[in-house]
Image 1 (cartoon, helix red, strand yellow):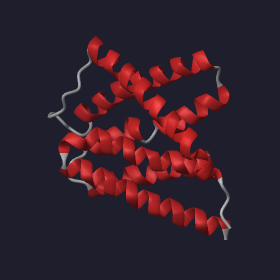
Image 2 (cartoon, one colour):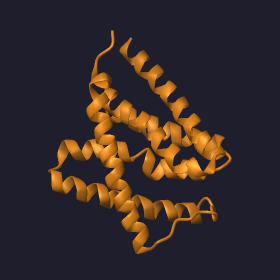
Image 3 (cartoon, one colour):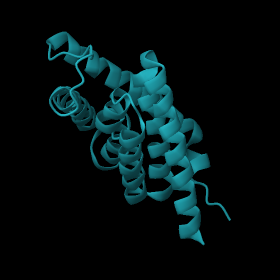
Image 4 (tube, one colour):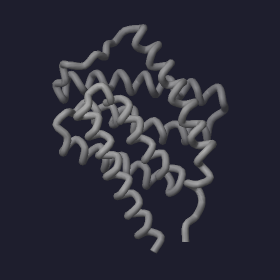
Length: 168
């Protein structure tokens, strides 16, 4: 019965994440926001069911969104940053010291940003992006990572006990 609940819960969260990414595809100024909001579903599953289920949710959401959405930019943002960052954050905080956590998170964000630009331009052919390989862009990525990390940490602190509670 527990496995059935897990599959049902992950399926509903995958559908919710795809709807969030659809909103980002339709309303283009919200593409980055919706990618992060879809990532909160991955965070909830990571806290409640563990690493395996959260990675499965991440891949299912990215694959279905890629197949269903006409605008691929929200999918690329989710694939390289919004969906993966919650998993990286939780894993870093469980395994590393505080100073090393920040170094790994910012390095991950910069590498994800670089990979996102490369894949967007060379694989998906997205030429209407405003992202560049420049030092100010990487400074902005580090700043956004700091802000997102603090916000996600506050959300975990406020609502983590609800997600970790076992249901009957």
